[in-house]
Amino acid sequence: MRKRSNKLSLFVLTGCLLTGLFSCTKDLDKQPTNGVTTAIQYETVAGYKQSLATIYGSLVYTPTSTGSNGFLRDYWNMQEYPTDEAVSTWNDDGNVAIYHQLSWSADLPAVAMVYTDMMNTITLANSFIIESADTKIEARGFDQAAADSVKEFRAEARFMRAYAYSVLMDTYGNPPFATDTTLAAGATPKQIDRKDLFNFIESELMDIAGKLPTPGTNEWDALIKGPTGPYFPESI
Image (tube, rainbow, N blue to C red; front, side):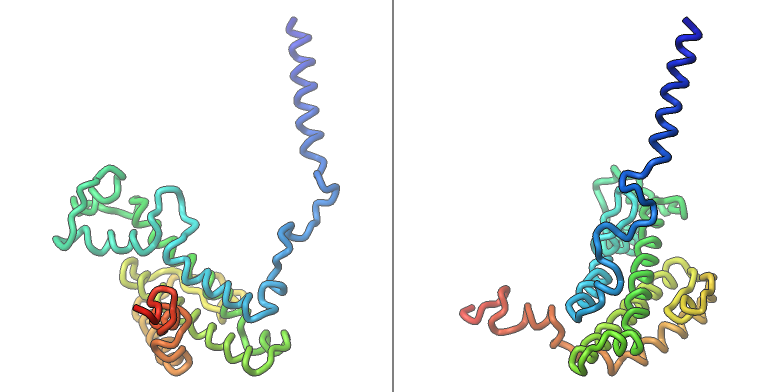
């Protein structure tokens, strides 16, 4: 009986090993199956706009672990619940109650989520900034109007990166620091001194001040404030 059991186990083990050795496509060196590569994504202004929307969307829709409420809500919780400005009556998620008790730590999931969300925003922004460099725009053959639009998008991505770093500086002190420049140099991100990070944020904001859309004219502003926009029809 034992010999038969050993033979059966050997048969199952051999089957598992053989299954792992073969690829379903018979080729382990495949391109991404969805077909959306960097070259394809950024070949049009619409593709750049989609990627920019992803950066903005990271403030709400985040790839963090289960239980995240999205950055904006988690960050609001972190800022308000330790004060007397707000009180939560839920206290059933293991996060908010700890804020009220003033006993949070780095082990608190809500604290880690805010950190992860902002690092994700920075990663997305850096990728966009790299792909919207002047050399990339020129190589992709954009006309002047399209190139100007992409450059404006790049300024917005730089603003979002600066904002994310300001959150990290305010709440965590000295986070790992990576920009399009450091990544291009192949440098491994290292923690940055809080003072140096402040100087970087300030210089970024000052540099892009004249490169951002005029207030009230960007796409979302035009949508909700325009006289014929869907939210405010002209008849109202």
